[in-house]
Length: 327
Image (tube, rainbow, N blue to C red; front, side, top):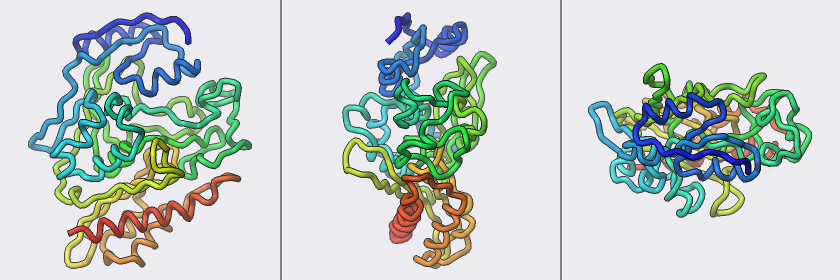
């Protein structure tokens, strides 16, 4: 780990100013991803600005829905009564990730910026376009069992690791951001960038910008939602495939649907293809199978992860079945 300076910020504008002023400065909150990558010399910030004392740790009901501060801890959000009642898919996604100790430290803002668990990205001995643009992608010809099927490019096939973000992709979330030029809101499904020629650029944050909150809309049918995660073992493991699903059903017909996928894509993957199949159709297994096939139609499996195509389809069908059976 390289030497760095540490400062504590007491208000958002000051934190933004501190990070904006230095090219290799960064924010630190829970540190559950940042500190790991610093120890591996994958990230080498020269200054860390501690934002834990900013007033961004509240969950608030508003006229439009719910506002979640960026410093809300994952465990607090998962067990919050409003979230469990109105957005159960989010609570379930949070509780499926990591361990209680990590959930007690990890923050909502940090989870949004969680980096891939690709072993080639995390080991500096291997070429990696995400870590060093233009150096190559070792995963393409390497052991790529855990890698992505959707959103990949010739430059990178790394999988986005977050569970929480898959749920947010299905919930029409908006991310609130404060930066040197002021504040802005970004729809969740516009926040992450396609890999293309520059997989090192993962989202639309500019240097110095700070995530301050996530806003969820007041959408009644989101209470009928579920998160299903399939993994190699039950604890502290990242998804092979996962599905966040929400359905509005009336008289046996699906009126509205949200489907998002995890473990199989380069970002939290909202499947509008699956949603188009679902809306207007009967809430039955045949519909769910058709939706699952549509969701994976553009999949590009690698040598060791082709099994994920069928596994993801089955995950989608199971998740939708659970939601459809909810009272």
